[in-house]
Length: 447
Image (tube, rainbow, N blue to C red; front, side, top):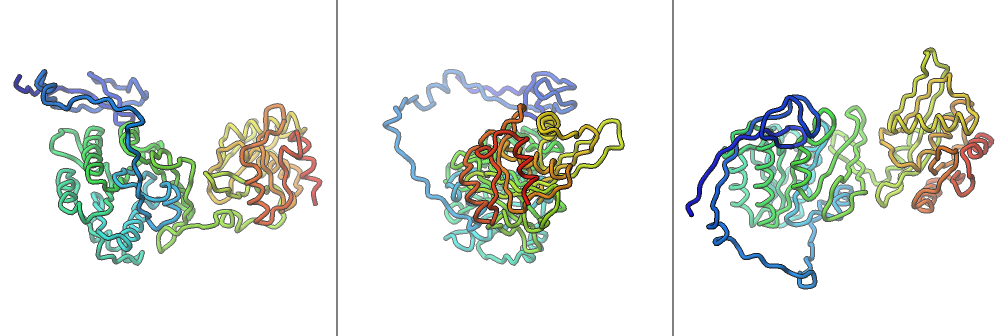
């Protein structure tokens, strides 16, 4: 049967990637307005001929599948290697996303330089947004001048794959900055559309797998903070990294959202300086560097980020409200969690916070999501409300329940060991106190 080509039109949501045979003003899947874009696709129909020419289906039992030994390539940036799972896997595709100006291109340019200086081959950096002259300015500022670091200023994915195939034997790493700028003439969609991003990613992914070539893709984020085209990219790549931090602060946190070759709970800590992204070997000292000696409203807690315990300072401030409804402001913690803890302190610890504005902040710009910080947040609010400083050597770790009870969190002993190493010898944990009321009373009595 001769092959036949058929062209059909469909509408694809630019936010979630959902497809629809007709246009809607509002996406039926993600409920976003005006996100459906028309796309045309060409499909080849081969009928029975495809079945005859295709490969035979072979079922293989698990015990007959050969194990694959992964020979990882270290990037020589310890914080990045930690998040990746001890280096890059050949043929792996990694997506790095983050807000504009957060340091994605800077981190990858440093990575390219480190790999090119140690590897027996070249690193190809494909830039679709910046010219080679602009990259040269950044490289000069970072002190990068590697001969094995090659640059290509191109956005056509077909020409990019052709260039990679020419140097596949010598190339050890490819960086695409960014995937949203690539396009192919085989599709009619505009640059950055779901169709163009998906097809460009698929072609690069197939090339990386076929040549066992590690590949980095830089991805933009939407105004809501999600990766542009998340349903398309996140499912296709092997690893998804997210670089976060405040633009006006030096701290940068690298997190792994998805990783087929390593853990997803590790984090890398960097600071943005004039010399680029610098690693932070001891993040706890960075977060506690400017902590006051003895001020009310300050309590230290320990967070587990993967296998690494981090000490952070929780700050609180309470003032009489001037409004009918008191304000609750949370920076670095969930606002609903703050509301819950205030209610528990009011009902179970006897603190009349109903007529007070409460402000809570996590020093250093880090975001806290684990429940083990509940007790430190509660103690900092109590300290600020009574204006009584808590012993600077106190560390608080524990989850607070609605009944005012304290619950033990995981890896408590490891957290306490790290706290003692940094001089925090007065622990307040659920092992010593059953209720938040007793913990508050004890903490405020400590001199």
